[in-house]
Image (cartoon, rainbow, N blue to C red):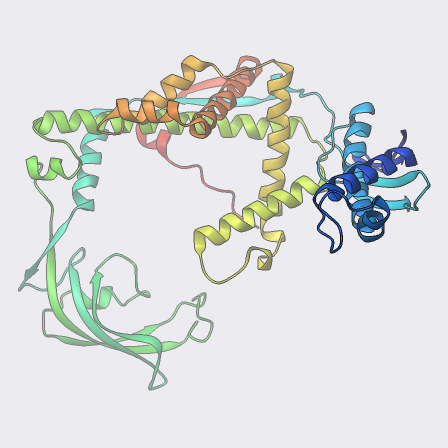
Length: 436
């Protein structure tokens, strides 16, 4: 087999491969012999059909199949021989495909970039530290109570945080507009669900009262037909209900699966969950800084085929998440290119760190991670056992642990500054940069 390689760009390779005709004919004959053993042709017993008849009927198909298999096998042999690492399937262009002549074809493909991860000592990391204070715990209990607020009908006038049951009809230029009317809808005053002035205009209203609200749609309203226009809403208040926070009692605790431990037991469980959330938030923020640092220190070119495949994956994920009748390939690729590029580049860099530092998943850390995840369930032992019986799930955890070990490796060489902050600041999500 003859092989020559041409570098057509930093990552693209054009490989010309020649395969002796004897190899092709041997593959063709092998398939014809297999066909002869099972071919059913009128006038001949199975396995007794003359090879000339078999060749006449089946040689074209056998040759096509043999060529496909030889190209696949010879391409693999060639990349191994040339020590190339293809990043995707090749584009095959035939040069000589004639019977009785040596097979010759050109395979064009991209290879994975070869690079060494550098600049770890230039990466700056701010590592936060925080504790769950009693005040943080008290605030979380208030949040949990508000999330479980019940509303009770009252005779008094409506005020902020009350839930109103209302009917309303909206008009623009004296005409009812689409989507501007509803009956029996529930609205919590102060929630910001309606356009500015709507909820404020119902403060002080009582059940059975009708109010006319003259408002203006915001200039940036999502419905461009209504943006900036004046409107009149006739609103009938059916009922006014005031919020009632649940008591911190056994009934409330049972909603969270906590029984017979009282208030102190409930506080202990909530604190554990907050501490778990805190650890994850700090870990996530450090990881994001590490990944950003690796990207900045190691700009690399990536194969277009990998980017295209990642864009396709993100398209599918978007359709699965948001639903609708749209097909993945109908979504513009530009929507996903930046995210796809980041994912692909980071994947290559992280894999290279693993290779350079000979990292392998720490099985003790794997078990610790599984046990921490399982601790959120009522029967953690069963969850741990389930992970160790499911290879796919277990390998996912191993991948996460290995990525954490990559982060640890970078932290050992990076410029790390520790900063003590409050619980709220530590768990607060990082705001995405605003577009210009």
